[in-house]
Amino acid sequence: MAKKAAATKETSMPLVFALVFFVLTTIAFGVLWYMEFADREAKIASVADAKKDAAAARALVKESDLNSRLYRIYLGVDDAEDKTLLMGDHKAGDKLSIELKRINTELAKKLGLEDSSKLPAELQVWGVDETGKIGEAPTKSFVEAVKEAVKERDAAKVEEKKTADLWKTEVGNIVAALKTLEAARNEFSTVAKALPADFDAKLKAQIALFEGRKQKFIKDEADGRVALDTVMEEKGKLERDQKRQKDMITGLQEQIAVYIKDRAKNQVNQFQFEEPQGKILRRPEQGVVEINLGSVDLVRPGLTFTVLPNDYQEKGRQSRVRIMRIPDERGQYKNVERFVEKATIEVIDVVGPHLSRCRITQEFDPIRDGAAPGDLLYNSVWRKGTADHIALVGIFDVNGDGSDDIESVIRDLARMGIPVDAYYDMKTRKWVGQITEQTRYLVEGWYPANAANDPNRDDKTKLIASMTEAVKSGRDKGVAIVKFQDFFPRMGYRVKLDLSVDKLNQATAPYLNRVNSVEMPMNPGN
Image 1 (cartoon, helix red, strand yellow):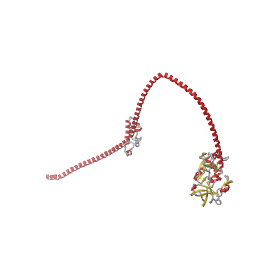
Image 2 (image 1 turned 90 degrees about the horizontal axis):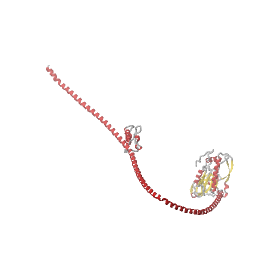
Image 3 (image 1 turned 30 degrees about the vertical axis):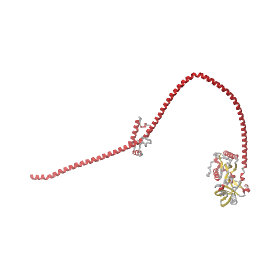
Image 4 (image 1 turned 180 degrees about the vertical axis):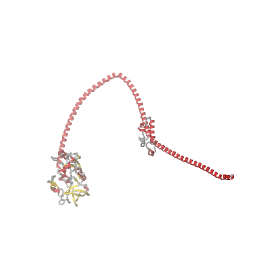
C-alpha cells in the first residue's frame, strides 16, 4: 500500500512541475505583456503630447510671426507680403486686433492721454473699428509719423532759434535806441537853450526872404498876364484857322459824297458794257459743251456762265427780252418782261490751258435756241484770272423752298472764286465783313413782303428800314446796287426769279421778333 502511494506521488510530480512552470511562464508572459503594453501606451501618449506641443509651438510661431508683421507694418519697415499675409489671416476680434488696440492704448498712456481716441491725428496711423476688424493697412507708418514730427520739431527749433536771435537783435536795437534817445535828449537840452536867439534871427531872415519873393511874384504876375494875353490872342487865331479848315473839310466831304452818289448812279447800267469772256467750241454730247477757257484763265470747277448768241453784242439786250405769262399767288396770270439767256452752264472739268468741259444746267428752248458752238459766254463778276468783289443784302431763297439760302450762296460764290466782302446779317441787323474800295457790286435780294393787315407789319417795317439803310451805306461808298434777278442770271447762277408771298413770309420769319411767326429751319444745304 505504501509502495502504491509512493508510486502515485512519483507519477504526479512531473505534472506538478509542469503546472508550476506553466503558471510561472504565464505570469512572466503576463508581466512582460503588461510592461510592453504600458510602454506602448506611454509612447502613444508621448507622441500625442509631442504633436500637441508641436501644434502649440507652430501656433505660437505663427502668432509671433503675425505679431512681428503687425509691428513691422505699424512701424513702416514691412516687406511686400507682410500686409497681404496679415490681412489674410486676420479675423474680427482676434489677437492681432487686441494687440493693435494694446499698442495704441499704451502709446496714449505714454503720452499722458486718456485713451487711444485722444491720440493726435498724425499718430493715429492704424486702428481697429467698432466690429474689432483691423482697418486697411496704413499709408503712413508710425516711423514716418515720428519722422514728420521730428522734422516739425527740428523746424520749430530752427524757428525758435531765429525768434531768439531776432529777440536778442531787437533788444540790442532797443538798447542802442535808448542810448541814442539819451544823446538826443542831451542835445535837445543844449539846443533848447540856444533856440530863442537863433529862432529870432532865422525868423527875421525868412521875413526878409518873403518880402523879396512877394515883390518878385508881383512882377512875375504882371509879366504872366501880358504873356497870357499874347497866348490867348494866338489861340483865338489858331481856333479861327481850325474852323476854316473844318469848314473846308466838310465842304470837300459833301462834294465827295455827291461825287460818290453820282458815280453810283452812273454805274446802274454797267451791265450793258459787259464783254464776253469766252465762247462755246463744240457740243460733243447731250447736255455737255466744251469752251475755250482753261487753266491759263484760272477757271475752276463750279464756275458758271450765261450763254448768249454770237450776235448779242450787235443786237443788244432787248433782243433777248421776252414777254412771259406767269401766275401770281392767286393763280392769276400776268405779263412780265424777262431777259432770257440761251442757256446756263457750269464748269465740271478743266481739261487744258484753253479748254474746259461744262454741263448745261438750263436751256430756255433746247430745240430751237439751244447752246451751240460759237455762242458767247458771260459772267457779270468773273474775268479771266480775276473776279469782282461783291456784297449781299436781303433774302436769297434761290430754290423757292421758303428758307434763306444766303450761306449756301456765299459758299457757291467762293467755290467759283468770287469773293463776298460782306453780307447783311438779318438777325443781328449788322454787316458781317466790310465793304471796301474793292467791292464793285451790292446785290439786293428779296425784301420782306409787307401788308396793312400783316400781324408782323411793324417788325417787317423796321427790318426793311434797316436793309434800306444798309443799301444806302453801300451806295454812299460808291458801290453799284443791282438786283439779284438781274445779277445772278448774267453769271449763269441758277436762282428762282419768282417767289410767292407765302414762301417769302416763311423765309422772313426767322428774322422777325417771333410775333405770329414760325421760325423755319435753315436750308439743309447750309
